[in-house]
Length: 430
Image (spheres, rainbow, N blue to C red):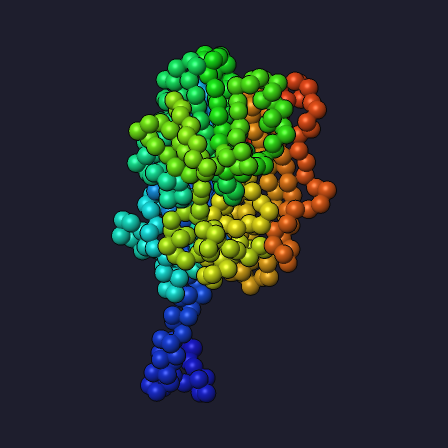
C-alpha cells in the first residue's frame, strides 16, 4: 500500500481547497474540451459547400446546416427545364450525403433570428442553436416594391422563376401553353443580381424551343441596364441561330420596367410606354436573403459587406456571409463563386479556431451559358483579396472567342454539362 508523502498529505482543509479549485476550473475545462459549434444557414451552393468543408477541414467541429427545403433546386440548368430540354428532377439535390458521409446535422427549418451577443440562432420551429461561428448563406430576396404593382401574389401570374421549383414549373407551363405567334417578355433587372447571364440564356433557350414548335413567336427582353454579361457572344449567337426572334430594349431605349398590370398582361416602361405580352417573366431587383436583413448584416445597398480574406461580416463578428448575399467586390453572384467563397470561409473559420492567421485567398468564378443544346459560351475569372477588396487578377481567366466554329460551340456545351455534373457531385453527393 502506497502512502502520500508528508508534504502532500491530504488534510480536510487541503481537500476542500482542491475541490473548490476544481469547481472553478470545470466550466473552462469543459469549454476547452467541447466541440466548437458551427451553424450554417442556407443549403445552396454556398452553404452546403461550407458545411461539408468545415467537417473535411476539422472533423472535430460540430456543424449544423439549417435549410427549410428537403431538396435544393439549382438555378443552373433551370433554363433548359423551362425550354423542355431537361428533366426538372435532375435539378433536385439531396442533403443525405452531408449527414451520412460527412457528419453534418441537417435541420430542415427556417432561421428567423440571430442573437449575435449570445451567439444563438432561433428557428421557426422553436429550436435555438448555439454557435461559436456562424455562416450565413441565405441567397437572395426579391425587392417586391421595386416595380409598381408587382408582388408575391402577382408572381403567380407573371412569374420570376428565379428561385424555387414552383415558380420554375409555373413559367414552364405558361411557355408551353403560349400560342404560336405569341410574345414572351422578359424583364431583366439592374445589377447586381443572381446569375448575370441568366436572363439572356433564358431568352436563348426559349427561342430554341419556339423555333421547333412556335416559329412565329417573339421574345422581347426589356432591360434595366445598357450592357450585360457576355453581350457580344449572346448577340452573335442570337443572330446566327434565331434571326430576329429575340429583341432587346436596353435602358437608354426605355427598357426599364417600372410598373406591371397583370389584369391586362402589360408592363409599363420608365417613360410610360405599355408593352403587352402573352407570357411575362418579371425578374425583379434583388437583395440579400431575409435573415441577413433582419440580423443587421446588410448595408444600404441591401447586400452584406464582408472582409475579403475571410468573408467575416463587416457588421457582426464571428458571422461569415457567403454566396449571393455577400458584397464580394468584382465577383459575380453565381454558383461557382459561392462554392469558392464557401471554401475560403471554411478555411478561415478553421484557422481562427486554431489560432492561425487567415490566408490571402485567390478566388475563381466559372460560368457557362447555353444558347442552344449544342451551342455554349463561357467566361472564367480569377480574383484576389486586396486592400481594395476582391479584385480581378489582370491577365488571368478568359472568355469564349467571338469567332468560333460550330464544333467549338458544341464542345463548350458539353463542358457546361460536365461542369454542372462535377459541381453538384462535389457538393451534394461525394
